[in-house]
Length: 120
Image (cartoon, rainbow, N blue to C red; front, side, top):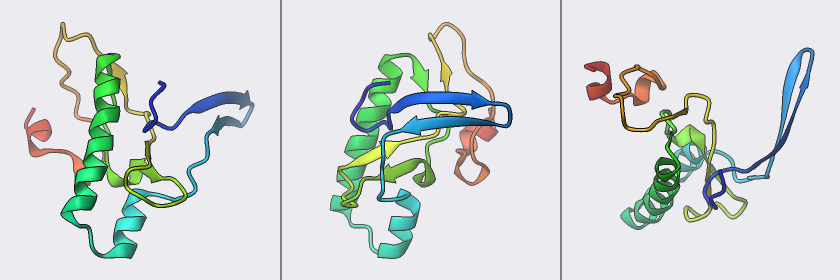
């Protein structure tokens, strides 16, 4: 995946007890922690953030990849903590899709799953 709002993975190594992943650095921490710390999340902030999240998701979908676990904990901020400089992470639940068959698995983090997904 090569998009400015998706964390780049450069390399990975397997050793007997671990898998080591080398990624680009995003020292600003999780979006969830920043929102909690700020206490105020303006409409302008939301606009900027969602624009970049949707740009990344559009890129994924245009490459037939579905993330399936988007949440504030899976969005990292870069060092300046501006909402325009985000990185989407954790593609552990992601899958390839081609549109020929419906995806009906119930996946994701329980507090963030939409009721429609639970209702199938």
